[in-house]
Amino acid sequence: TQLLEQSPQFLSIQEGENLTVYCNSSSVFSSLQWYRQEPGEGPVLLVTVVTGGEVKKLKRLTFQFGDARKDSSLHITAAQPGDTGLYLCAGENNAGNMLTFGGGTRLMVKP
Amino acid sequence: KAGVTQTPRYLIKTRGQQVTLSCSPISGHRSVSWYQQTPGQGLQFLFEYFSETQRNKGNFPGRFSGRQFSNSRSEMNVSTLELGDSALYLCASSLDSGGDTQYFGPGTRLTVL
Image (spheres, rainbow over the protein chains, first blue to last red):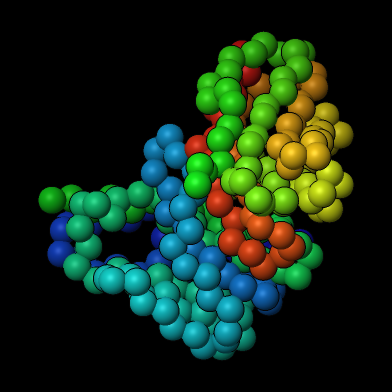
């Protein structure tokens, strides 16, 4: 069974601070995805990383895929209240559209 | 293009009843996956349908079943409901085979009393 562990589970910070969320597994995934979910809605895809060592940037968000394709991180620079939400990492293997999700990081950014 | 739609959005049932949830994928998408989201277990994969065939199945009891129609719309059914089945049920659609981006619907919130 492939498992993804996310840390921290909860994060409460002030506007303007930086933060990093980690997603770790003992298994290799063909790709890893990061989602953001707001209350009452389904997860929305932020980014997909495929190549080991890959770094992708989305405005103030930086995503990194580990060299061995087992771990990933999400770094947010100068967090804003609008970044508040549940951040989920999800790994995909080669068995079709079957995502394994991490437990999520609930982020609250206070103004 | 309209997004993934799920009906109903909210549902209250009692133990022992059965329930059917519906998912309409994005037009042109042929794969539909179902997930269960609970505070304790997070998001867990239920099953995936592609061209009316179940292609992948998660680790859930046989009370959870699904099907897909020729227009790619999908339904999932839960029989003999238990309190622990209370959850947000999410459906996601993607264009084709594995590796395509999955787009999630808003979910159906099921409460079992």
